[in-house]
Image (cartoon, rainbow over all chains, first blue to last red; front, side, top):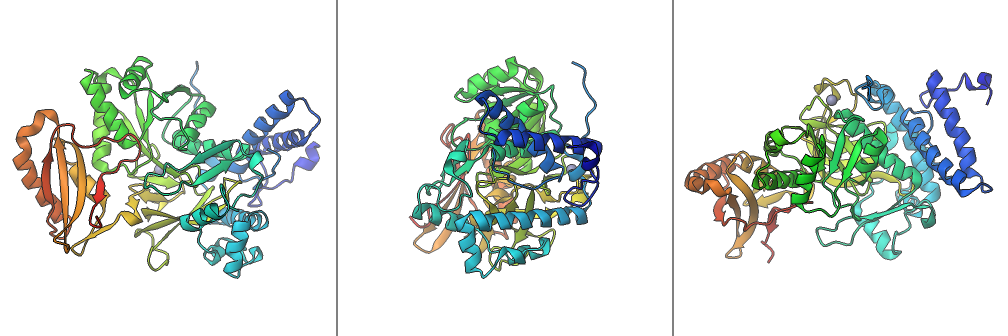
Length: 72
Length: 445
Ligand SMILES: [Zn+2]
């Protein structure tokens, strides 16, 4: 995701994301994509899933997302 | 290791969110949660259909009361109809990474729950709100006096402490003596246990000649699993030389929904960005105004596998506003934590008796080691309440005085109701590690 498209993102209450919120959301979204792939070695896939759920926690706590993506 | 300066809150953004925004957030989450339950859980769809409700009717928090209640009974019924998990699950059983069940202390069919990776991570996360809020930091050494079995108990707290970066000291199958010795030897700074078991450890320590307050390094006791009455807390704080922090959760949620902050306001904050808590009159089902006692109803946004929406907990609580605590959190408070079970209330000769209220009075007496409350029916009509009391080994002399004073205190707190008192022999009464069962109702026998 480019820097320009990331600015202007809003949280669940419609507030502009802070720099670190953009960062954590971006990481979560990238890990989610990785975790959903079925062509990876177990050591990549399973660790990506674990890392993804940790960042999902942070994003949910911050009210950036509310979802159950079902790729865990 | 250099100690970093940390904020007092695990989640500063949401824990101090102004009330209106918190309600808006809850409304948004509720909408999504109900939608998902409708689409993926046949149990919930059935429940809503029977109430003539579709998810599009839920547009925000104001619509919460349109949703039907979930009860333990309808949960159990769906499990019985379609073993093992009923038709409540939103996902395939193979997606689960954990299986837990209720301890089934009352002899009922256990309640079975599953968690996905996310659910399990969220369970630990809720404990993080509580542990961090009570001052637990990466440099702490946390001892778990917990059996690590199928009962969910402190499981989430264990992973919370790993996440925070504490040194975790698990003690699954150890004896009480072994636990006491290890937590002193390892200089544990935090101990997690039920209030009853924390007392038990203190007694065993004393028998071993260990003064926990002097010989130990414990600065925080985190209790859960049963109500922590004020006198027990006071006793524990003296015994351990540590602050006692109350938390409460349930298997149905998988984690805690309330915790006591470092200010120790005499109650527990609700984690309102992850839960909606209501208090209702269990008879009329109408909301109880702020400050009144009633049954807590929970909606939890965390466990994806099993949506929990307007679940009747049967827990007795008294909700008071968040600003009665000075910590700055905007989550309201349950004064005294969970006060007991709505069903525990007993009616003796027209007077309501809560076991917890009785315990609070009994614990004022430092000479009492253990007790049991016995309800009987004499001559088929007259209900009697008897408190069996076991005194500490070195205080047997004080029985007559204690009998008189305790009887008076109990009667005064119960509209003059007469309590019979009897003295039990040393070691006669049962001790408890998990859920204490100190009231026996034998009136139906
Ligand atoms: Zn507080």
